[in-house]
Image (cartoon, rainbow, N blue to C red; front, side, top):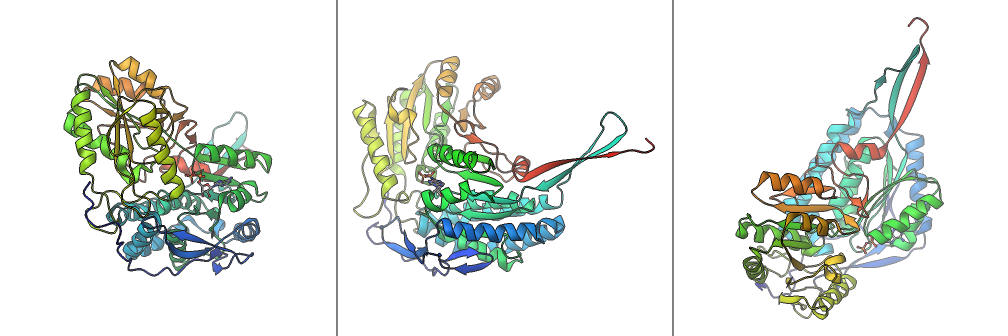
Length: 497
Ligand code: ADP
């Protein structure tokens, strides 16, 4: 592996950590309990900063602020254009502070700085501008009903949105959540992931600088079973949006049902098939399948984590995938040219290592990798397994790490059955030059996104979400607006129809 910089001597980040408190009603405040928790640098396991630890009491405070901001306004009653202007000013500030935010993101999460600074944070800005564009284009319909009635629908904000986000794309997930909620006029209590609290606090401060009225967005750092569960169970929260694991998704859906039946959208796990057909250009397919799995240290819900390869090109594909993984530049994510940094924390690190051992024990062929890299932090070698069989755990479970599993197939109907034989249904990749093959597979796969001859193409306008146990509802694009709107039917008799 090209460990360009010794991972034992981490590069010092150049940005101070200024915001570590909770953001409630537009003010930075300590947790009611006074407690803090450390957020760690995945490169070393060292403490970056101590962050206020919100729990149920802080969620109560934040929900009260959001409730007041919703019930008393001005936010939900402001014109869409006014809301849009605030979001656009926010986007300008994000752009201005892009590199500081990217630095915090890399420091807290371990992702390559170049990826954060050139792809993710600009995408956050793009998402906010996209939803700023929707804010003044949300309206109901006039409905032609039987009888002498004038019927119209009003599209109203739902109220207070509770939002719980994960650590793999901290600020990007923040933007997918707050963009549509704010454009539609809702107020928000957002809980960040305990591993990565920093970038959302920084960005939220900018949103207030852009003119957001107090209480419209409240950010609570803290843990899932305390702050997260309190938010999901809160009687004054009208809507819950969650991104995370399927197990936690089930738990929060239960909490929502048991409390006030708040409406819930979920973006959960995946075990996405990437199908490489016999007519594929092998070199291109190898590169794309590599990125589909290894991008973001393999910590993507839509990672192409079951690589199905047609038997005719299988041996060549395995050989070249191994070579590609061995060339992957792993090292300090602040160093230029680095493709892979450390995993997020020791828990994920241990879980991934357990899956690697399970792959070996169950008889898959370890082509390369399989071990930790360095002595400090949570670096894992890019790992490739071939001869993976359907019944192995590494072919069934979401590993969420840099572990590629390559499986062999013979014909299309067989690979469709195998690809669909999963409780997940988030995404799939199809690699072929044959339009009929592409169409057949696209229609047969039970997943929320099909990438044909590409992978991980994200855009503010493209909806994203899962079939089956990968989730409920869609984020991004026009589809996410309905998650944050109530429809009110208004009926008026017509005197002189
Ligand atoms: P992961 O295992 O990848 O950390 P989780 O689904 O546990 O994924 O975490 C995603 C988000 O859900 C985080 O913000 C986490 O704090 C939160 N969370 C975890 N457990 C709960 C829970 N019981 N109730 C509400 N939120 C939770």
